[in-house]
Length: 214
Image: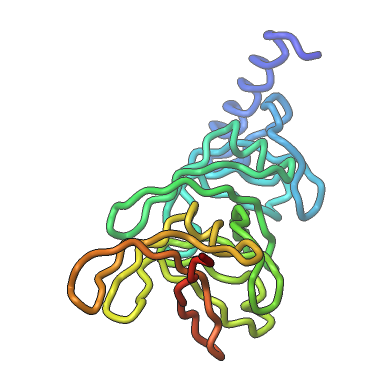
């Protein structure tokens, strides 16, 4: 383990080189704590002014990063978790300044460092059986990359009524033979409570009333 004198000695050596050579010299990082291993080459990753970077210049994790169009900050502890391939809960800020929590992991895409979001499943897709997850405006099937078209909008239409679909309601609807109660307007214009379930009509998600058996 290096002593304070060792650290100071290394620091002065670097400064003397800069002064004597009259040019920028890459500082030694031997006495700086490594935050983890580079996911590309296995080298050490160190904190810089604006980044967390690999000693071999093979990997850069920006302190101010983006997930698609949403921005978020990465502190030192979060950087350590990302480098350990852990999921990190981050606060994402959209272009219109709205914030939301998201669980992110590093996803390498060639020379680029991207992020993938781990979303909670709200149920099974009634079309293909894969997991359904939540986005800002809908609940959608994770099998969409394979061609599944299931989408349950958070503001869904049932005739002239707009149904507000929350996460808890979506979970009820996606259960086997699941249904949920909604307040809708009847033909006479009066409000009434009905029990609705999902009805798949080709590529569309409709609703139908569950009649009570008397």
